Amino acid sequence: MYDHDLFVETTAGFSEKLLSHYEIDEVLLDLGDRLRRLFSLAGSGVTLGSNGQLHAVATVPADIHRLELFQEEHQEGPCVEAYRGGEVVAVPNLALEHRWPGYRRVADEFGMRAVAGVPMRLGEQTVGALNMYSTDVRKWSDEVLDAARVLANMATAYLINASSLAKQTLLSQQLQHALDSRVVIEQAKGILAEADGITVDAAFERLRHYARSRGVKVRAVASAVVSLDLRL
Image (cartoon, rainbow, N blue to C red):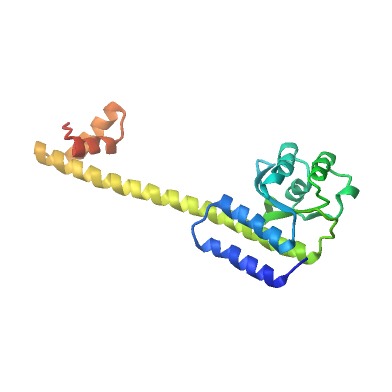
């Protein structure tokens, strides 16, 4: 059930994405695919926590999404337990499990006989959980669960990196906007100063007064001066 060489290949391929631009939803779906191949699963899911509630974000294959969605809607199931407790919840035989009766009924409809929920950890915080499904009764070995923890941690790293990239992108956009604004304002100051025979400082104050009195941004006024020949 566990192939170490395939695990190395899987983690190497999965980690390479961290060095390139990626969409987090695509990464999580890719994780689901890799989990299925690596552990010969019938399906897998990735769930993320928000405000104490677990939400299904990626399911492979897509037709078992209802099983993951049940956990989200009822906050009941092995992934919810793994998320809340921060520990692996491995169930070798759902028929012998007495927890989550509603979840077990839906799992039975899909022919799922065994399931494991693996927490996605960030230090002491649990940010989500992975679900692994089997259509056969299955003893989840320590090797499989340890390997799943590694992939869960990698998925958490993607989430953190995506957040950092988003913040960096926003910062870059804000910086570029500020630079662009400075350029157009400088151009407008020069145009007004030359046209009216005033200093550039006086031209800037005129821009600011005009913008404030009309409740618009200085850049918008400067752009009108440069592009539309507005004279104040």
